[in-house]
Picture 1 (cartoon, rainbow, N blue to C red):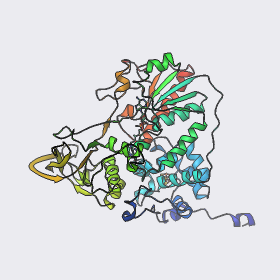
Picture 2: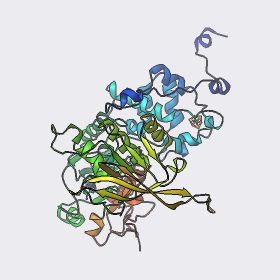
Picture 3: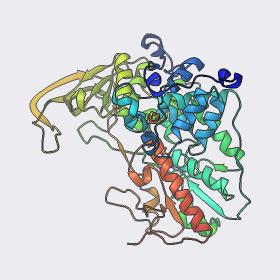
Picture 4: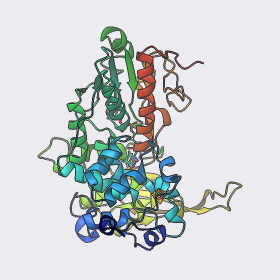
Length: 484
Ligand SMILES: Cc1cc2nc3c(=O)[nH]c(=O)nc-3n(C[C@H](O)[C@H](O)[C@H](O)COP(=O)(O)OP(=O)(O)OC[C@H]3O[C@@H](n4cnc5c(N)ncnc54)[C@H](O)[C@@H]3O)c2cc1C
Ligand code: SF4
């Protein structure tokens, strides 16, 4: 053995790697975190991150990459953390995902990359999301953001409608190609659901703001308080404002509501309205901010998906005793297991197999009680799913606020003001699956507007595809709109 080899660090083999214990993400304790909107996970230390990254077996064919909607080189960035270079790891992630700090926090990794990680066959899978977050936070806090090279200006102008993950990702990809990009946003700040839906204790605002500052450095222009379909139409953008192509990234912000007596009472909100008031309009800081929210003591939350968990946990932080009402059982709750666990740690009241049938009001039409029918689950059908079946037995409980978290549909404003944009019967905008071009030439769409509601990373994956479609269209290689 010569001197040089003697100094080389020992490279762990697969057996040694598989013996390393999984590093749990440290969390703020439930007793203290329910009194603040501070982020619940504290983040890995350098040592924890390096240890967790060493658990990756560097598979010859990494299944994790295939399961990531934007195809991040996961073992590649894990190797860089292992080598003590988180800044380079963040740069590697940014090759395919320009929102790593967001995705590290909110992506459903347990259903994507971590679900297929081979380590997970016998052990807890590698904490890919926690490590993505670690690398991105390191990059941000050490000021390592780098502006990527931008190609020569093409002279083409693209209008992006909506500044959620889909709009922002497409804006980024198109700006890099040298196109002039303007983002039109209906509200007064960029970020879409990242800002008005996902609570600050899961995704701090500084993380999003930093990414948006980065986009502004690429020369992308943001126009706020601009509702396309009301103030300007698609035709205006294409023929009056002179844009060469348009991307619709308007999301799915039209709430589904329960049509039962009392649904229109005072104190009954959709989850979108409740969360928007608090997070976009800062109603939790009323009267310092002008928008109030009436979040009473007894908040009834209808539904048990991720949004319901966000509402329950938000209400708790506003000093309420929230109760979750869901017509199926705990086992069928659609929320991610981690979201449900965090909500349970924060001690909510749970009414499983309880279907709200009426919101009872007082003489001023303010909600005062919720009436539910008890349900039981049927035998599993051929798909294995058990249906909730009414029992005819009812119960009534006190409440002063109701929040319905029952999902959302695509907002119809744009399709209803342009007959050329085709949608399916649920209002979802139809696109060519390869280019994301709609039925109107030069108009593309991505994100929740074409799925009816999905995830941040799915929206970003589609936006990437749409940006490639727009680039091809602008450069004259493809110009066919979706055929009938
Ligand atoms: C409460 C909540 C929690 C969630 N949690 C998670 C999570 O933890 N992880 C995850 O992966 N996904 C989560 N999701 C889903 C995820 O946020 C969405 O799938 C994603 O944001 C979709 O991105 P988008 O860009 O298509 O739309 P959006 O994020 O909805 O952005 C659309 C933007 O378009 C703007 N807009 C709409 N209409 C117009 C118009 N006519 N003119 C101009 N602008 C317009 C809107 O104001 C908005 O800013 C959550 C959703 C909600 C509601
Ligand atoms: S599947 Fe798991 S072990 Fe294999 S490369 Fe990906 S993260 Fe590493």
